[in-house]
Length: 286
Image 1 (cartoon, rainbow, N blue to C red):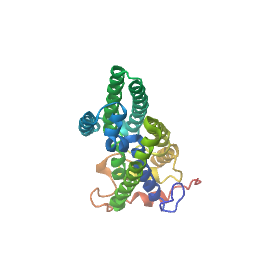
Image 2 (image 1 turned 30 degrees about the vertical axis):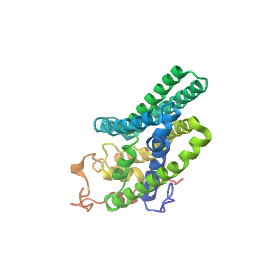
Image 3 (image 1 turned 90 degrees about the horizontal axis):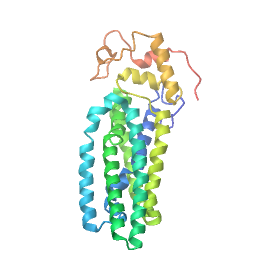
Image 4 (image 1 turned 30 degrees about the horizontal axis):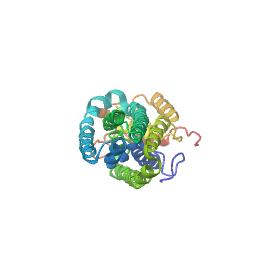
């Protein structure tokens, strides 16, 4: 099941493909740089030129910013959708990371040359972009990877699906926590460039592999993932074809759901989405 990313080894609804998505989305979330920022913030501020006491205070303030920024998603997530939230978050985070690395290097060079005033300015700039990065992450990439598992799995396996998401987070966070001290010791501020590159890479990955779930029912999500191909454009075409052939089935509202939203059991004369998907003409699998 875990290896089902394009075939049909986990059934017509491709549950294994969804497991792959939630695992890798969480790993990618960590490689966007947040593990390095939160765990090694004092080291980061030290690279920017601050002493140990100031670095500790700045780390605490940064975590407070992190917490408050999560409230932004309350107002934006359903307005712009999950994919666009990840797009703009990754783009802004990449820019922030590149600037943190550049300003940190400027601070180090200024310190080495004995120009304390210039080093302080570079350090302040690096700290500012660290705060900006953290706020953007809290408003975008922190929330969506935890939300997606609750939206893409059928009710019967939702708890297990969420558990796989936690597995992905544990892998990404643990891996990066172990690597960060090695990276900072070996390449210093260039570590931020690695994180910036990860943010850039995440944009085409989300575009190609993560379907939009905003304002879609559980049955509609099942139809999306019943496409034999993992690519978003194929899933959306599959969904559009299904909708055209079954205009009364895909309703887009909870009230017309074919299953009870709390129990996951079939209600009335309707059938589960899997039953109808099985009757669709088969497309060539990748």
